Amino acid sequence: GLYRVCMPNADNTRLHFVIMRSVFHTEKKIDRVWDLKGSTVGRKSEEGESVLKDLDILEEGKKLRFKHGSEREAFLKQLEVDAAFLATMGIMDYSLLLGLHNDCDDGCCSTSTSGGGAGSAIDQITPTQSVRKRLDTGDDSLTTKGSTELPMTNTPHRRNVLMRKTINGTSPPKPPPPPSLASAKGGGGGRSSPMKSSPPQSSLASNPITSMSDLGIQGGTPLRPETYYCGIIDILQYYNARKMGETVIKKAAGGDADNISCVDPETYGKRFVKFIGDLAE
Image (cartoon, rainbow, N blue to C red; front, side, top):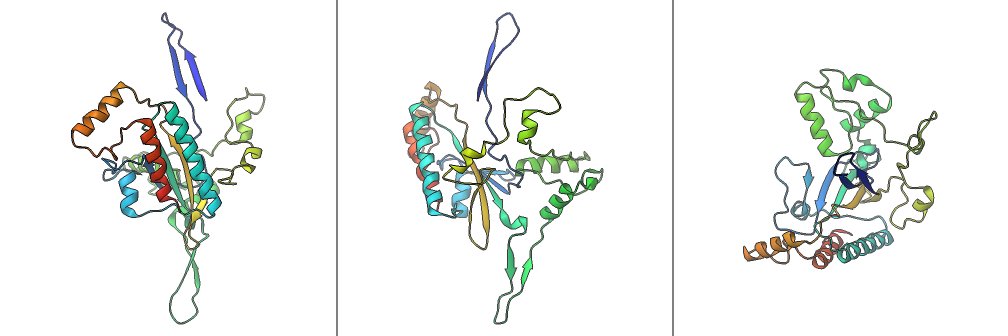
């Protein structure tokens, strides 16, 4: 929601800010993250960055493989409606923040030996699963000083932060569990909060894209199932005079007019939807 805070000073300063639900509001580990704008000029991540960009996903040839065609159509339709709305508001420079959870880390995948004889299934137990299991059982050995293992955290960026803390000799904290509806409403006579951790079940039942409570979208292949978490972010940038000037300068400098990031909202929205649509299968 949109909030306003009036500061208690002589000028009666008013601060406006927006609070959004996290795109990655899930207990599942986000294995990979992309920030996608639909532009290919300067849209490649630097070495060591945990968030990948448009050129990275194109060079890899990564596709979003939906489990059902109807879910793909509903996803792209919603993306088109959102982009059209933002264009009417004069908004551009937004991104689709896309996170991928590899379902094989949950132990649901198996591999079999190839050859003429009968293959035997081998469950794949990963270090991530071992860490998650120890966290779920309340094993505090992960957070003791000197431990080289890191607790399971939600995104690559947060895991990198914890890794740096561990290298510097600081014990990484045990991540708190995600808030529940009960905790959001308050307990023990505490003041209730207007914020809820997840939408009501009635809205989830009518969601044409996913029925998962954490809004993950199931996809991938039978041998490598994946769950996608995504949402449009950075939706407050108007195509103002500064951005118009940036467009002119980049075009004058020889930039590809069709692929530079800074373009008018209508062009930006159409290109954005086409780019994501080309990735979706």
